[in-house]
Length: 253
Image 1 (cartoon, helix red, strand yellow):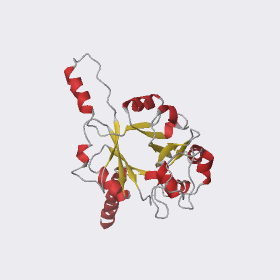
Image 2 (tube, one colour):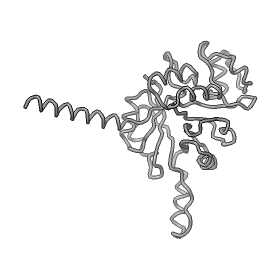
Image 3 (cartoon, rainbow, N blue to C red):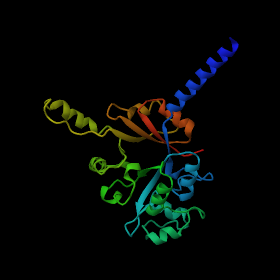
Image 4 (cartoon, one colour):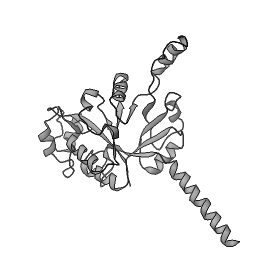
């Protein structure tokens, strides 16, 4: 009897742990994730470290070089500052970008490197930030594994048509109050204005209950939230609403 009780208890524990793991959001390595205690490098080493820690989605900030190539950097002033050229603010050519080192040791990432990483790791997805122009993002291969933050309605719907894996509208839902108001005024046989299904939004700290509901509205079906320190904070945040499916984290371990 004692043995049977033990087996039942162990079975319940397994089921409980399975249900807990199922409730975890998908973790997104913010700007490649922290590497050696350094944040927001958007570097190749950060990406490799995040993947080695089991992260399946890597977010990179994207900018354009003077050659029109996509590269990973939050913005040009911060890239210059991190590569020994503080005070510069202009875009540079791709060859100069490749020749630099971030904080003297990390490798800047080009579109070709992104391609190589995704070829080497078929289960890895990319989340893009800063650029949502469809004409520019068409440079990127592997659209079925790329998630995009769109910053205009035009970009949002254009990127969806282009076949990117998932597109998120990176704005507070409040602008859609006018859209919903127009819906109410229209007759039932009038096509309703389209509304994005997915949103990204920003939350401070580990997820404040007073702040999150302002964004977690009835408009969206899925949400990606940025950014929190670690997996534990991401789990706490996702517990606020079942539609929070993705959370950006800084520390990937």
